[in-house]
Image (cartoon, rainbow, N blue to C red; front, top):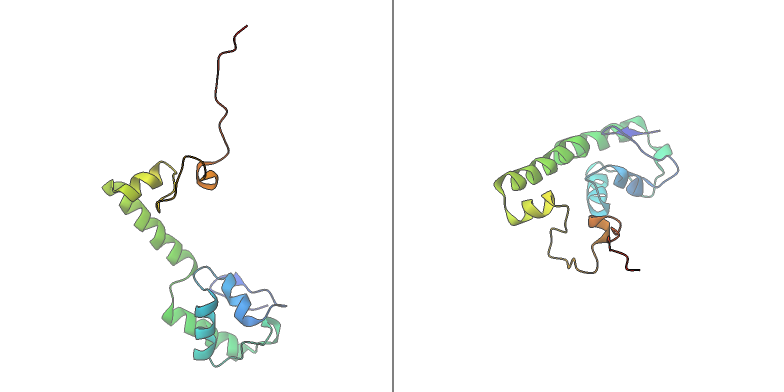
Length: 123
């Protein structure tokens, strides 16, 4: 099993799909990485030689910020917005949608499950 950037790639997947399991690498970046490392995209991850795995590692390490470093950078950007008190930072702080979506009816993913309203019962 190939291990790149601290992620075990699924061995039965094609290498161009398996690389997308690494945080920060999508389909387009995966094809660029494979072209740079001169690895056939249709190969399965289990069929890679050690030289190909090391070429992939080298290509990713030199060109891309992935996994922990990328997560840390993104969280630092969000923390900066929150500290400055920008509109986006306030939305992050309140756990509301940041990119202009409506909140009166939707946004359940961001706001969480509905909170039941407390009403007084009349007899």
